[in-house]
Image (cartoon, rainbow, N blue to C red):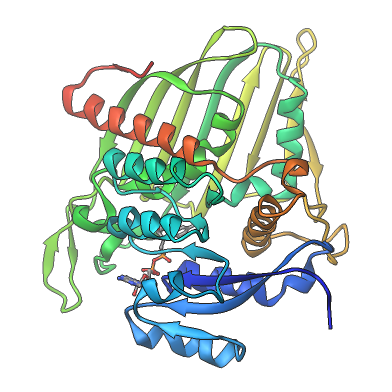
Length: 383
Ligand SMILES: NC(=O)c1ccc[n+]([C@@H]2O[C@H](COP(=O)([O-])OP(=O)(O)OC[C@H]3O[C@@H](n4cnc5c(N)ncnc54)[C@H](O)[C@@H]3O)[C@@H](O)[C@H]2O)c1
């Protein structure tokens, strides 16, 4: 029997992301890490049909419940991954934190700014509980390379940053409406709440907090079929373009940052990207070319991009051969691995920590100001 410390997880919300989390734990042997290891001990979902896949694949489950408080009251659970619709984040996250279980929560970490503030208040009154927000894309090895490049300040003075997340799944106008397209459940932020935290993880970590925002929001698909085929209103924002001013904390110089979150971006399947342009150097990464780290060094008139193909040299080393490809599920597993390190004494060695609760509050400030900007047609100051 392995003597490694076990962290017993409960999952609340067994849908798309709940399964992704469970699958990551099931192949934990993939990582070459000798620290604490997570095990799936409990599951919770109101919809008992979701339990089948977990029953079929996780014979060691100790608790199966439709009431999340059963997991919180159990001494067989140490930590929770919570992936439920946005209108439930506030109460669920606060109850989890107050129960003393560590929490890896999903974005947007509260349906709106007031919900987010209440979650952060609960975190402040429970300082021993470790809480992070999910965001996996920075853990693509080629993006980790870009982060190293940023930390080395190879850009000189920043001219512009473009960060975004483009989907095209909503281009199919016959796709039935679901909770992510309903304001009451997804929230007023629409696509910003759904995709925005992903785009801000790296900028916020670099200290690039917007001082102002001008927002243009679009609701392209105004109706969608319901489950019976009748057209019903679809009121959420599909696309958002936020033009922000940011002050580089290193030198106080201002630059523009464009944050794009689009559910209707023709041709883009799940395209998360960041591009940084500077006076001395520029770099970019996109999940569209997940192996590629592109950079250029500006010298005189020469402006040639160089592309490095990066294999699977991940933050937490894995069994995968160095030249093999890395994917979404690998990035998600890396993120969980770094959360596990936060729970152990390895946290301080973490090369790029998961999104912090404070960073989620910055995202709420930005999205709330973006809503105001779009409504009034004005640029809104944030600081
Ligand atoms: N990190 C990422 O890349 C990523 C991707 C997609 C979604 N998300 C986020 O994950 C969260 C969940 O999204 P999803 O796509 O997995 O949604 P989903 O609809 O697939 O799953 C949500 C699950 O929550 C369950 N649920 C609803 N009410 C419940 C209750 N009262 N008690 C217990 N369970 C309940 C539903 O039955 C459903 O199975 C959201 O916050 C979303 O923004 C993150």
